[in-house]
Length: 225
Image (cartoon, one colour):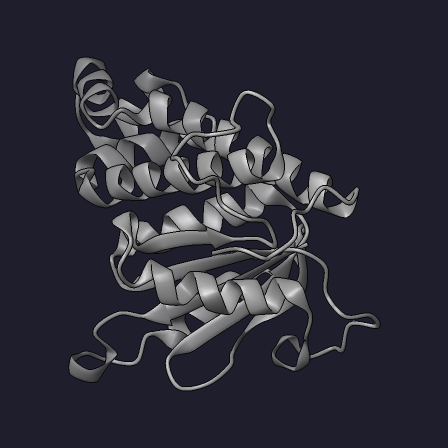
């Protein structure tokens, strides 16, 4: 299970963006992958409970793209039965999300992932065995890189990429944007759109694998530090 805790950056000097984020995430009603809806928990913080890694990655990157949020992703079990209100939930996934969002405030891309495993002493250690510690390192590193790329991509590149993701061909996207097909291709290429989409799929698969390993009893003693 995944808990996402997002804390607004610069809230003391800017408008309250929580209501807009919550409304946007919950606008279509219950979405596949969202077990409990996103809610304001306290002050300028938002929390949701999910069971699909690809949805988690999509929301995390969208939040990173805006530049307004620190995103913490907690992996692990939750206390059952789960209450109807997300903010009333408890369990390791909620605790891990709290630890993650605090680290995210000072992490690349303002995103972090926490799980009940011990990090390897050396970065990249245990990756070959795909154990939970190695998966945790891989997921977090990938998401931090993706978040940085999403934030730095131009609005023109974002617009072109969103249309292509919606199923339009580059020619159709060009017509919609009023530019040439070559310009669309250039925007996608300069924004590393296709590469980041592939990496996002890999990150989602790794995050799903991490959750699966933990559910199967693959956690290490000592917790995440």
